[in-house]
Amino acid sequence: MKTPAGPTAPLARSSAPEPGRTAASGTRVAWGPVALFCLLWSSAFAGAKFGLRDCPPLTLLTIRFFLAAVVLLALAAWHGTPSRPSWREVGLLALLGVLNNALYLGLSWTGMLTVSSAFTAVLISTNPLLIGVLAGPVLGERLTARKLGGLLLGLAGVALVLRSRLGGMHEDPHGVWLVTGGLAALVAATLLYKRCPPVSGLWLATGVQALAGALALLPFALLREGGQPIAWTPTLFWSLAYMVLAVSVGGYGLWFHILRRSTATAASALHFLMPPLGLLFGWLALDEHVAAMDLLGILPIAAGIWLTTRGPMNKRVSR
Image (cartoon, rainbow, N blue to C red; front, side, top):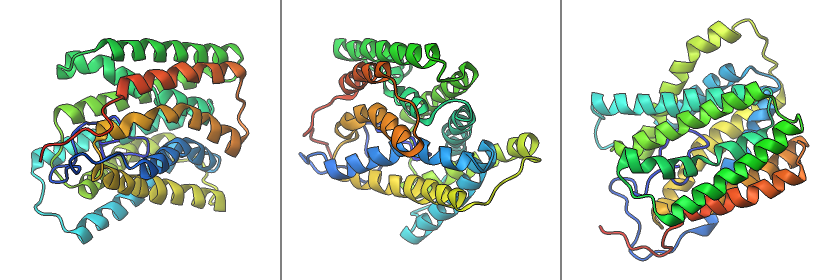
């Protein structure tokens, strides 16, 4: 999640703490905040599914990102931004916002019109596996035997889940491709962030990305969904409030808290909880179907993510 952009920014985004805020030397992982963050991240898709019943996806995302930008930029002003970012920094944050918010969530939320939130959460949760294999050619990181084993395990689990969901006619293939496109955008944003990490503070960087995502989505929302009705129900208001406050703002506040007490590599160890939690929230909140093959498939996915992101739990960080 280190890229401060959207609700689903993964824990394995970057191993470097926010500039100026390193973890204490020898500090253990703050498991409580990490677990709470995992719950927020995993429940985001189910929360979005409620809002999609009353509002088209691109319109809902545009409203969400505009509201989140207002709150996040207000937090940045309240905390006091040391200096204005350069135009190059603004351009980088805008590109990250387009990839991380407009494309990633725009495609995945549109896909959720015809696929379940549980399946979306499972598929998106595999992003550390793709990052693990692409970090070599893009970032020059070595693909170890442990990471390769984790990648193969994760891909085997994805194949099992895909076979279960598509073979059982539980998911629409077109929606699956849209979610896969969202996953590709998320991975691209992650690699861009790790190659060119922004130097702005957390709240400012997140707010600029949210604003960029809203501006990028606005014309498409008007062109594609301008004539579609919006039902301003209590469910829609609660969904928006959860997406903005709990996920876009609260999630990043938690991550900021986590990074001050542990390294991002160590914190990412709980990322393997995302696939089973995604299925759990889809089943509990939306009564989505969960087949036995789904449960079998998430085991190698979870193990693969754990192997790929596993790092020293008490890794010391140089100041």
